[in-house]
Amino acid sequence: MESYWSSAASSTENPAIVDVMNNYQKIVFSRTIQESSWNNTNFIKENAAENISKLKQIHGKDIVIFGGAELASAFIKNNLIDEYRLIVNPVILGDGKALFLNKNEQKNLKLVELKKFDCANVLLIYKPV
Image (cartoon, rainbow, N blue to C red; front, side):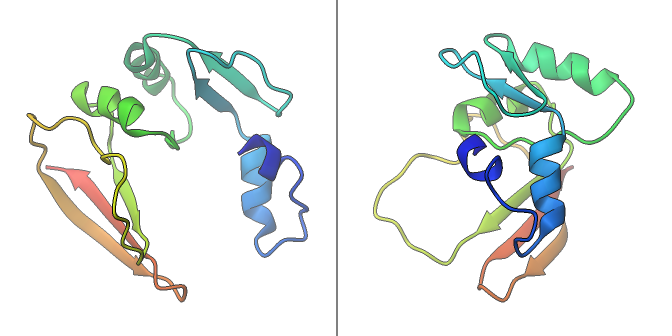
């Protein structure tokens, strides 16, 4: 993401997204990568759920997760997700990684909003019940 957004021109289709991606605080959860030249980037190497729990106690803006199943699963297990925003792309793949790893744990969700896009993607917004 750093290589794309740090060089994206503000004259792209949506300059507000370029601004958000480049200027808002970013937290990278990684066991291997520990440095970046991207603006406002901090790293957390371990205890992701514990660190996010502390961040959620601070008054401020929303936290958005762009991450894989392992990171999301840690947040789900610790009830740290207030809203799920899932984008469905109309492509069928023959193989891939699971979206969520918490196979033995059920979370009931309520659909609160649905958005259709011209590109045929659909955004589903859920809240935990």
